[in-house]
Image: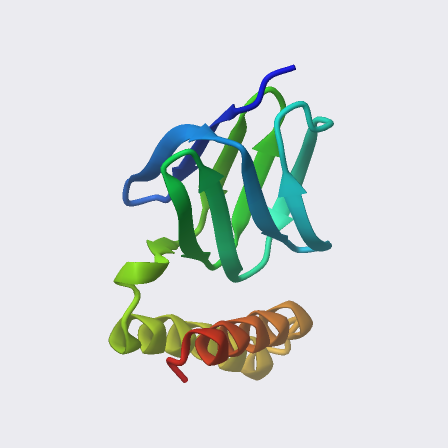
Length: 134
């Protein structure tokens, strides 16, 4: 039984992480989950939240705004946007929140579905509160 698995975190801009991990806490759209070696294969969508990575070198945390996670023998996370938690400042957080609110307002004005975007805004506001950025 393997004690670690390969983990890769990629955003459209760059690869943020590629390392052997013991566990990854994933903010899934249908609920949070912890991926560990030998976990059943699954693909899930991400909601805005904090992705927590446990490795021999310690814990790393990333703020993600959405995307997908594919878990098999390895774990690959393809994030819409991902930022190392340590690198996220008030300005970066405010930009993320403003973009989400703008998308929500556009959906409202065009008669589109607003439920998903309202949830995204609420999730981002919760992240800001947890990190002391709101």
